[in-house]
Amino acid sequence: QVQLVESGGGLVQAGDSLRLSCAASGRTFSIYTMAWFRQAPGKEREFVAAISPRGGGKSYTDSVKGRFTISRDNAKNTVYLQMNSLKPEDTAVYYCAGHIGARSDYEGAYAYWGQGTQVTVSS
Image 1 (cartoon, rainbow, N blue to C red):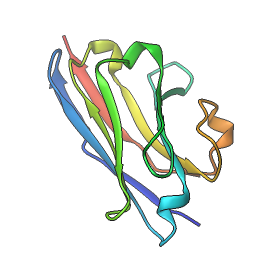
Image 2 (cartoon, one colour; image 1 turned 90 degrees about the vertical axis):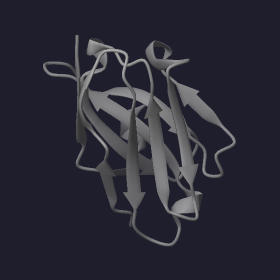
Image 3 (cartoon, rainbow, N blue to C red; image 1 turned 90 degrees about the horizontal axis):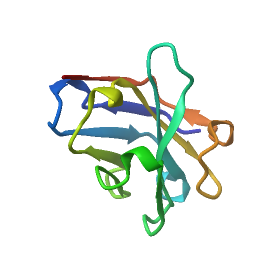
């Protein structure tokens, strides 16, 4: 079992940057594929980015490519989402998720979820 705790959200202006962190409990973090999803008000939760267990493979949704970077530090049991050039449409609650398996953009594939952290981007 893995417990995930996100941090780093906040209120920023368009064009600013934020780095989200997701700290995982347990000694087997390095075997989990990790991902970030987000849910904007009134919308369904959507995939943002995913990273393979050793960090060699990454995938992104088209709307964040070139602006967001997912990374992980297995020694610290932490996955990150560096968000640059933020836009108002990036406003959402951001969730960290993990599972044992291949990278996926399908939220149903992920067994473990954090509680979410709010990101608000003002124009």
